[in-house]
Length: 132
Image: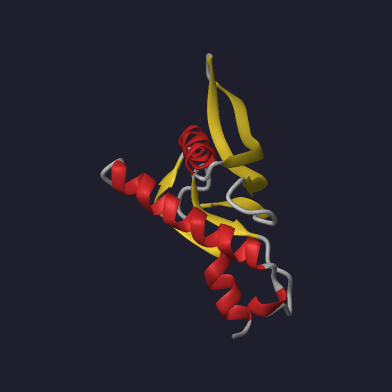
């Protein structure tokens, strides 16, 4: 198992791109259902510009990053980031856990890999429950 396998396991493609508000709802669901603690940071870049007699507000890129710790077992924690959609840079379509270049799956704590799998399962369930 190489870097490609690690990246595949550490990356969760969402079934649709979501806004930052929807991302917060998803994180609340994960914290409740793991159960666990999630610390996160959201950023939204905005632009204001004058167009004739009015001010136009335009949303730019967004970012999401944080840490997840599951109460399920000791050692089930890791850092993550939400990646902006290639087509809607103001929305997030991927949750990725941080990977170490050159590491194989056997180099990661089993608790971290278990967390990746648990989060993937819960994200799938979350969107199924929402009918998406």
